[in-house]
Length: 370
Image (tube, one colour):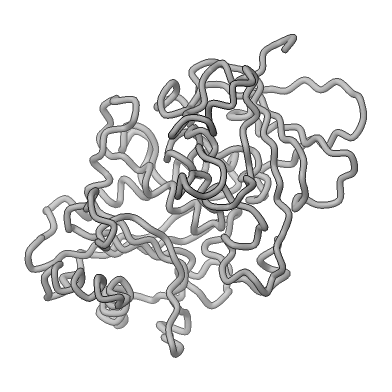
């Protein structure tokens, strides 16, 4: 993996058994509800039946075709002893208020748990740390900390807890668990935000567009877990994670593809193959079942079966220009003039980039004879 060869830290391992640590956090002005811990246990580590769709564990076990098994612990709710405004004011002044909460919570539990058990790959870091806060999510303000994001915990000095440190963490609101899916279907607990943020902890970047004034618009067209928080991961992401191995095609041949959702079968088209960090096409046979079933037909996730074709340009930048594992590519889908990964539209309309936020449509799938 690129990160291993260039001394980049990344979060949890993408294969094998990974361990997640979840700390619910409440404030003087926003106390936790009695069932917060039990709901988090279901959303993170429960079964499909517990949530009405998927938990973090069940989703990634299915998406990885059994190669990744995420387990972990939800601690009792930590009370900061401060109001949420106390932290938000510091955040607005440019202070790392989320860091403050992380350090306070880790120190509070230091004598109660063994943090080293959450380092499954023995790299000296907790695989994945989730801080889930009780404050209402702020959907309006760009200057509020009450949103969902994943980042690295950078400190001026070493902060060891049972000989391991915190590194990649997710900071998110408890209320995300009760958002309606894009499809409007009723589920008891919505783990889509947890799953998307865990994609970052695994080393995946966002595939949506941050700024319509920079680079091509539309991201990946919406229908992907790292774009609109829906459906399964695409073949490029799964190749990076070590979950699938594509058929590499450099000359004329015939290949029968089964459902990508069920088998992970996909095709890589290139003139000469040497590395995944290159420019090529990826093809798979999309089906609106399995992890795609809940949101099929919404926010760019296809409602019918067909061939998806992606153009990928995973050219690497100079390692000295990258600070995190998400920045290793020369291009991204957010603010560069050229996309890291782009859906090729079968209908040729290019509406994903031509509209303000163009979602992919069923006509973008290639059918027999097209």
